[in-house]
Length: 75
Image (cartoon, rainbow, N blue to C red; front, side, top):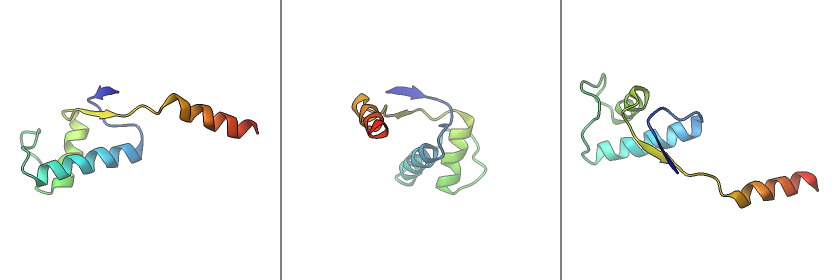
């Protein structure tokens, strides 16, 4: 796994990271941007991702999963 500072390329990954950060903000975490444009937790999380101040890790797909997909395509 690698630590990222820029927004994820995948829309699904973007939503997952933003949702997890919004949940942290709801639990009392301090926003990482100085003056958030909105007071809504999801908007603050999206702004943090866009600003590149949020660090996150995306899991790498296991090597076996790729092999299984290739086997299915060949058959």
